[in-house]
Figure 1 (cartoon, helix red, strand yellow):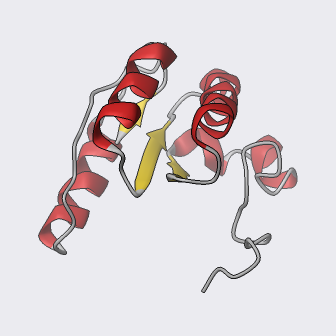
Figure 2: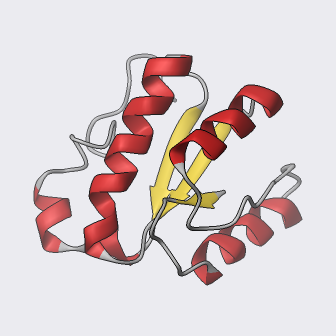
Figure 3: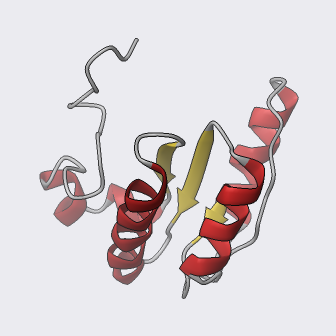
Length: 113
């Protein structure tokens, strides 16, 4: 779980991480306001199955998009990326159905359960 560079809010990501942990997942909270290079380095080092990205402010959606592109460029389709936070509930983002960010609930990947 992480927040993009410029994201200062972390409580939502911490709560989701705690919920996943109580359900048996091994969760690492990297913190928020991290540069993309630090997040990519951690992914390289730990090879997670999923990466959760949190953005509260709408202006951080662009940084989330760039982080996802960097993850896809460096690692392909693994790890899977989850996004969450108030910024993704914005009508501007929802109208796009998360397409610039990856697959959303309306566009599952082939073979997804």
